[in-house]
Image (cartoon, rainbow, N blue to C red; front, side, top):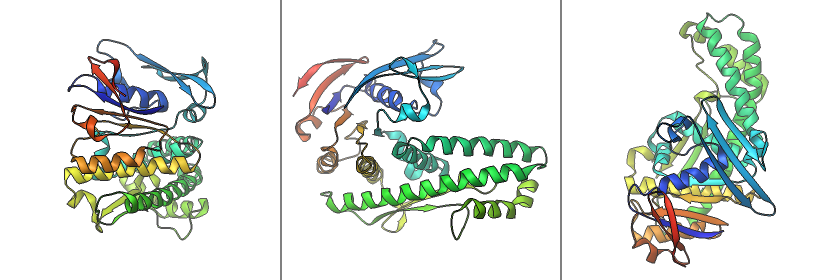
Length: 335
């Protein structure tokens, strides 16, 4: 519990420590979608263990091999959704800049991470949609015969996914607006908008199915699935302009942390206050902005941040500072 700052030079292992916590909680990396890149050079796989203490105590373990990922809770294999319920977590790292200036796929991943973090059972809906989509893509590559069944299954999962994405963005935008109003920095207007690829009067399975059927011929001709939640977009505006077009590196970093804080508030409002991970917390931020964004997280049950600069210690009140060298955490320097 509490507020912690990892202090160490570049290459000391600060990001790896935060990534390990995130991976333990989510079975995903915030740095790469390829878990094989997380293993040590020359190793076939890896494992991470940790203990969560809240109202109850849980021992979590994630093991990865080329055959897949295994999740254990108190030594027993559990479902993905049950595992994800145990340790809510949100993070900011340089990789999250892709939410602002990356591809639509980067923003869809951000959306789905938020949906699953808010309601871990949503993982089943997302997985079902992805399985159906892959089957449909295979049929399209083979000429498109037999699409009826898969369009019907896709419409059911797709409508559920779209509704959950839409509800999450509404909550995220509400929390972001509240945060921007209270943060001690002058900011331009910021806004979020979920833009589905299917234009529907109402998001129901039947309406999704009709929209997919309307695209059947085009999909057969192009041999690809041209419409559906896998083509959705999250629009992020800064002063009514797409943020990637006008924001500086520092502004993108600032907005990313505000977005992280908004995600944390969504989870807290839902009764799942998260652990907060902030990598290179001061990068691209002057002291005034650093102090302002740090205040957004002080009510979080646990914050773990990292920095290369000792001067950051003076800017962050009531923080425990831990020296990090070659991946090893030393004793607390300041309390």
